[in-house]
View 1: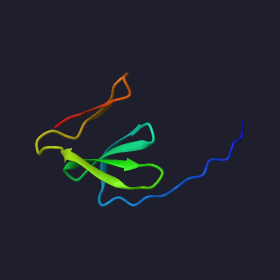
View 2: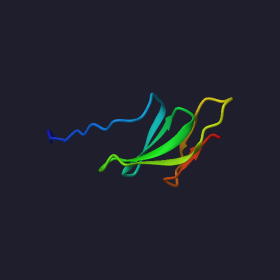
View 3: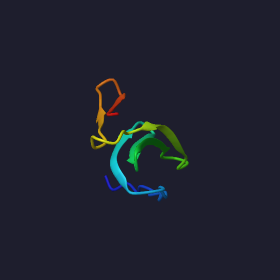
View 4: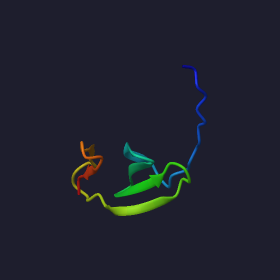
Length: 70
């Protein structure tokens, strides 16, 4: 149908290199670290550093988990 969807805007501290949805959360790679953003509140939580050599990699798994490159 033609349902109305409310859109929210959240600020992030830097340029996003990778992004993927995971349930109510969004996994982001920002600068040299992975972060999880709550899509309801916009709260950011640090996960771990991305590393220096390879580009950040976020891959969804069938089990509703994420595979992150380090």
